[in-house]
Length: 496
Image (cartoon, rainbow, N blue to C red; front, side, top):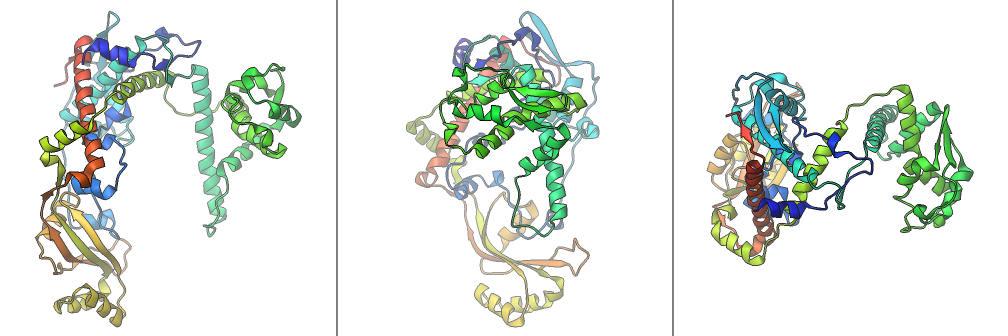
């Protein structure tokens, strides 16, 4: 794809705030778009599953692994085990990569790379794990940082074009995230306190958000100016409002919130689309308090009390938003025809194989009744007689029936064992230990059917085929786009 064409395709995607200064926003050397940080192991995972999931797992069993119902991960690990890896050493201040933009060289140092990896939820700031990470894996994360920055550079080069992605001003961003962070913390404490006080009450859950906001209303000394608020009930479009914007919506300790301060927020609701005249006064006041006024009042309170919360700096938010918008706009422009889908199906038969699979019943039971199971299994009883015999003996167990497993969904040794059994036979009884210190648990499998690998008929996977073909086309297009961006920005990578 020609880069000039790429720029034309992403033009008009960013709405910049009126007070936005492009010069103040810099590339982020420790940022990478989430979809690039944890890329799908197969492009199909980037597409919605708008068809039966059973079709998806039939074609892609390794992308939809299964656990054995009724067994914990530790209990499954009693049958299987894992592996490990190694890492490499480097100087944090050295440049892992660089690129040229606007006549300047931007370096991404190893310290930047480590910072991005440590920020990932799965790493949880585990510096030892980052130090031991294989070079190939770190190289992938470095590429993601570079790609994010190049998308950002492309988006920023467009300037203040109008379009579909809106950047908040720095003040709006900080205020909204301060409010959201504080409310989320409140929700956690309020819900935990409620369930401690009502341990047996599972049938009713109150509006925890309302409870959380009410819990701090008194602390703030919040007093709603209901008469002023109700004046807005008859306003259909706040943009056309010509009244006094200094109107006080509420007061808090040593401060107040005016209509001018909530007018932008109010424009999301009073925009001519819905008339609030049909609301009762009480409903309108509640709506205005919780959806419009409270955020401003609470943020003022939080600022005065010096509350601090950890969220992405504004610069990082801008980088992510601009880069995500540029990438989305490119991908949204990729389409595929029915003819391309059919050709893709015929050209890639290996992608549409229904994997070898087994259908099983299995029974999880206490070790104390193991002898009964051994005796019944020796009789060669089919599943109906098996269940009848268990019932007649008063033996209790957890039964999972008609469960289908495709090759690649189970742990390797479990799969190898079950797929080797003859249909109509039982497995050996597995002693899977005890996590609770009780009598222990056992499991036995009954193989109902085993089906060989086959090619799926086009009509049975029609929607999945469309998504798979489209995802691969997007993936190829994005790869070509990034190749050209790497050349345009003269990317150099020192990590090998």
